[in-house]
Length: 214
Image 1 (cartoon, rainbow, N blue to C red):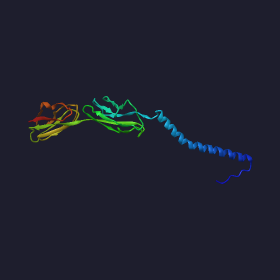
Image 2 (image 1 turned 135 degrees about the horizontal axis):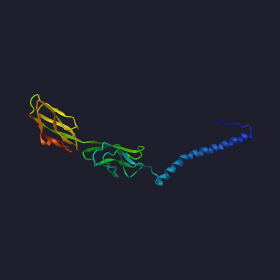
Image 3 (image 1 turned 90 degrees about the vertical axis):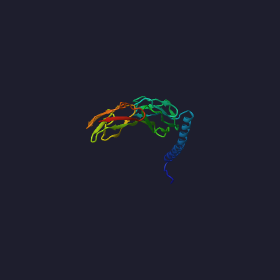
């Protein structure tokens, strides 16, 4: 740096004062990273770890029995709940794995974003998506005259199916729901349904229903 020329004692004094304060400022700046490091260490020593709430949202929970686990605690959301929160917070860097420990009746729930470590995102907010299981509801049609047809319904949950020849029919039906298979429309025939055409869809397929036409 080129030397500065001062023409008066006052200017020389001002230059000296500026130089001294500049050196103080530079020393202070160099100490700031060290100070920050010491503060961080002190917080860790005093239990100052950032804590995270383990929580999330729920969609589609329509039946009881869901139990969620994060590897430490469990929670049991109720039918219709849209959020959940585990009772114990976890520290920065702690791994968590939110999973369905028990599935609800007639449903399957999947967890999205439930496996990570605290601090990788600003908050822990897993998403639990539940859907009702479906199974085949099936049977056979017999005695249907040539050129005739029958439309079979089960109620309002699924669309009717139309049968134009003797043989198999089936519905994809939600678990846990009642069904009543009956002719809703016929053409050139009349049909009756066997007694097992009325029931409740459990957690397995239902078959062997017979529709007899003439």
